[in-house]
Image (cartoon, helix red, strand yellow):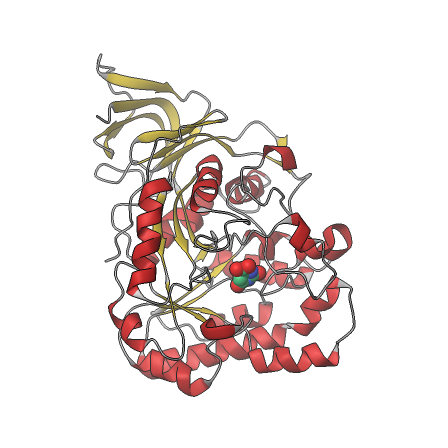
Length: 437
Ligand code: DOR
């Protein structure tokens, strides 16, 4: 039986963005009451949250958790442990596993695996190929259709306008695009062939490649008034495009990496800085921050994409692109808030509330009666270095090693159960399949 939990004397972030010093009662996995003081009954399990801040659990809307098929990099158990430690109580996972998640059967298989071993809540995208339109129309439950317009090989690459248009033209569910122009990338790969400095990655897959694809996705979305989400938007040019022209049915996300790292990172961490779309310039960092502040960009995703250190140690361009993120995203952003770059309330909006709204996830993303008790208590007073030996992701590294951060989760709750408590996981906790309205 799940017990009632009383969180006492936390700084509680309320839905309007104000803070209340008070108590939260959790019953049957749901927030039952939020008040300055709630009497402790003998059946309640108390949590003393004095000095801690209570936020809605992070919903990370873009992760690659590698199961099935690529479990040497990560699996749903290790990834969800990393989520619990990072305050991520729900995730939406991408279809580039083996087999690809392009059928209902593959989606069901992931949901089944997650029910067995995931410590946090889960949802899985259905991947588009040029041939699986019927699956895209009927797959359930799923946050939406993922299209790789570029940066992908094999069946998941849909880079021809006619094939893209066929997907945009049929159905109504959300389409999430990885927007890079594959033809331009292929041509520039030849142009820069032979260069092994990983910094060339940002020139091969340049800003123009991202802009071209975002323009095309936007054009098709407008033609059919089709719900479009632009994944990991990375350039100032794309942000300016959306600032001028963003229909009500379009949303966009940005990663902490694209906000906080830039091409200078190649000098320090080499191929560990290689991701798709690539890191950009400091000016792009600034324009992305501004777009996020102004609401042109709607929310934050990590694009957690683990690869082993051995894979990352190959010489460019044989290295795989991607970096892990679920353990560091919340402290990274809260550290920015504590340094005055944004507010804690904005961080919670970008990492939870706005994601729930955009994907139609009911009862998540706020601390209010009736909402699911997916919560994270963070410590905004203590600073600690990101260290390789503390990480739970199977890949065992972070591009942010050595960064001094605050806002680390102290306790994480999923569905009213304590899944992480001061460095200790409860591996018995299981999340649930997320439903989408
Ligand atoms: O850098 C990336 N890595 N970007 C992607 O879109 C895919 C991901 C991966 O799966 O490794």
